[in-house]
Length: 432
Ligand code: GUN
Ligand code: ZN
Image 1 (cartoon, rainbow, N blue to C red):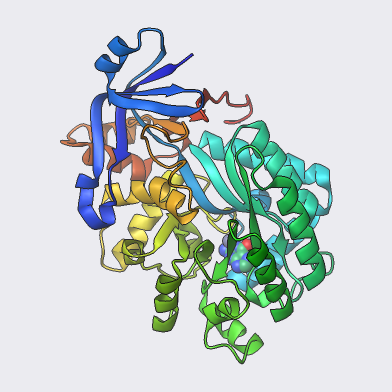
Image 2: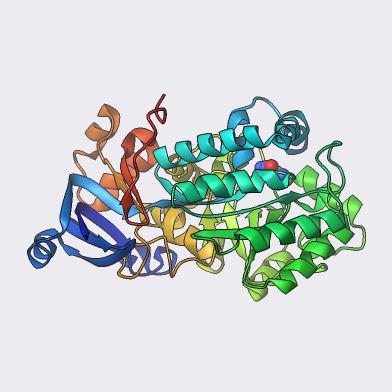
């Protein structure tokens, strides 16, 4: 049985980084018809209703129907340490992250946090995500099992580290290869799940481990590979010490077969001209993590890179300070302002949906509202608090109506999410 969702509908017909706000389609009284997990038609609500009288109608009134948000870089195991005070990257990893990730040796704890993270993500309108797990293979199993139970399109991989991490959080080049391969063979392509080859970052991998994972990627070229790149200046100096032969940070990956289309680099703030050139030539993806970059004090991402590189948006939970992609868009706006550029609401919304889908090479499946795409949708209340409501009253177009929700909105703005064509029933504890 088909479902017909009625409301304001926002979709993209092009890239607003090239074409401006005209790259979006807004229907004030729109409709989205979905059947068997996919979007079948988009158009005027009354016309769709007349043409499909059998469809079950969900009328969301003035609320906005959008593609669900896609969080292109998260660490689900860091859910419980979000908002930990006072450290910069390397100290933050050693003080908060590694002790917490150690707890994932217990599969029951991994399962508990996977459920908690996914319930929080969905309550914030995030319908897809690309996550790091921990070193423990069972932490990948826990995440994928929880994502599968919710019908999500999700990506994840075992984080690999064979140096500069505490006992209990290190593997080896060989075990990283073996366990990643086993997990990949088990999970990749199951339902809506995809395995991602995941070296944490160059400081915690020997060249041998990076090479082993590069070899694995060569065997499974349709997989993505995710890692961190040039997040903080201290980290970059450390990479220079650890890899004296390398031309720059990117070269530590490039030299081991970890640079090509399908590579997804988180942060990528302090790039050299050579690195930018090579990222373009290779067709690599970048992920902007603005709340993390301000919270950990990393720096200001150059969002003009989104004009020419596949660029997604992400919370970087728990280095990031919010589970909300609305808050993340607000931070992207603020970071760009500090660089002298005002990102348009269409660009912010595009980054959180189509941009992230493109960064993950999934734009033919998710991230937009168009016939044939998977029906992952978020329903957004554009007057979810008194402060937002009063700020939208004078809005003359959809962008003026949307921007207060981008800047002031949170999970209270999320009326509903549809996952693979089904209305998601939130766990009773979601908003506890
Ligand atoms: N670099 C290496 N690991 C991490 C991590 O867990 N979070 C962030 N923000 N940066 C990293
Ligand atoms: Zn990260």
